[in-house]
Amino acid sequence: WLKLSLSVCLDLSPCSMSVICENTPELSFPELPELGMEEDCGLKGSPVPPTPSPWGARYSMWSPARRIPSTPSPIYAKSLYPAFAPCWQPMEPPMVPTMAPQHIPFPCWPPAPVEASPELVITALMAEAEALVSIAAEFAACQAAAKPSAAPRPAVLEHVTQVGSGRWVQHTVAGGDAEMVGTVLREAPQLARHKHGKDALIAVVERASKDHQRALVDVLRGEWLELAVDVHGCRMVQRLMEVCDDEIRLPVVAELRSHLEYLVNHKYGNHVAHRISEHCGPAALGLLLPEAAASAGDLARHAYGCRVLQHVIERCPAELTKDLVAAILEDQPALACHPFGNYVVQCVVKHGSLEHRWGVAHAVCEHLEEYCDNKFASNVVEAVVRWCSEAADLVIDAAMRSSSSLVGLSSLRYGNFVVQRLLEVRGKQRADLVEALMSGPRLQGFGKHVQAALKRMTSK
Image (cartoon, rainbow, N blue to C red; front, side, top):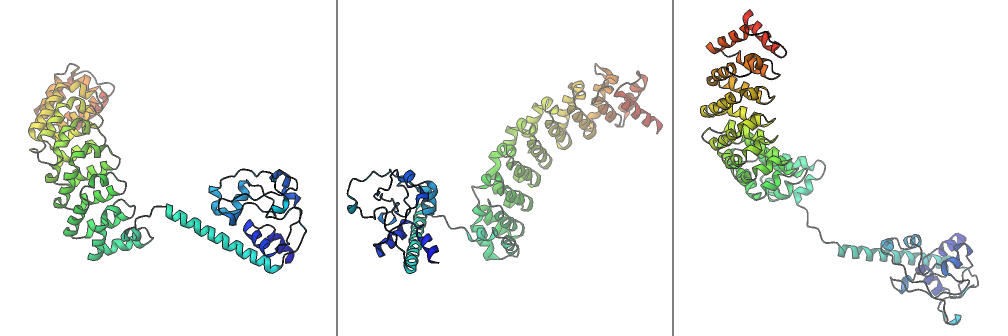
């Protein structure tokens, strides 16, 4: 045990060795050639004065037992002071002393070997432990002083981040606990942007009274646009549009109405714009119409914007959408041939006023051959024949008078679908159409589909 203690003592830091030296003046240390004194200090047996330590005289970085250099390696510094290893600064190497050995306050080499008592070893170990604890405490205090104090987390937000507590908050709010609902409303700005906190606000939207819903809208006033484009906040805004009535939704829509195009182009905001157009009534949608009419062409060509325009045209009266539909009809030839714009034109034909339907029908008759030869515009022609029966005869006359003839339209890849739709029209015009097809040359290519439709008609 004594031999082991001595080996530990010889491997201590300068603090422990100073304790041993103070209690045992005659203590000396054996030669340790394996530590490489010549390589470390550049001296051969010459005493080296201590180098001042950046941590004070008590924690000198030179030890006669170790014979370490004044600029120790990073590995040694890390093992000696692990708390201060990241901020270690190397020091200049020591100079060879010129003073007489008797004036050096450290034992000269080679000292006479003596043995240390077990009590002294224990005392040194305890001093070493106390020194390290004090250094760690000082370092932790410095870190705490340098780090800015974080704001206290809201109480509800602390609950919803814990496993199971978030569900408890939701059930408490849904149960009508006024105190919990008030706490949630006070912390609504932080909860709305949290992964689990938004669920507590959704519970308020779904289960709380109208007074609490109004309070939620007032608390988040001025932040609805930021929430609509937030990955978590957009969920709560969508749910509010689906569940609440127009009285609650109007302030939110009024805040978002001037940013419709921005919402449509946003990967999260487009869902909010879609929910507004899908669930809001004419009063709320009327707030969006000026912005929608100003950018009707761009919205109609957008994958998400075309759905918003369709819902607005479908749910609003024709008197409110007059300016919007007029902007769409101005660009109808280009929109009818667009992959997304053709759906907006079809929606005008299906839900627009009679005046708007006739406007689309006249444009179709003027560009019938071009429309029938286009994959998307042919759908517009079929929509006119299907939803605008008053204009179906007009389209049949245009087809029979076309320069490529009715047989030519039937042989087109997409035109044959238009001709088949025309055969479904009832009236005198259909009889003239059937007679023209039967008396004409045999249909080839895609016209075989029209030929099959004629056979089905005659077989009935």
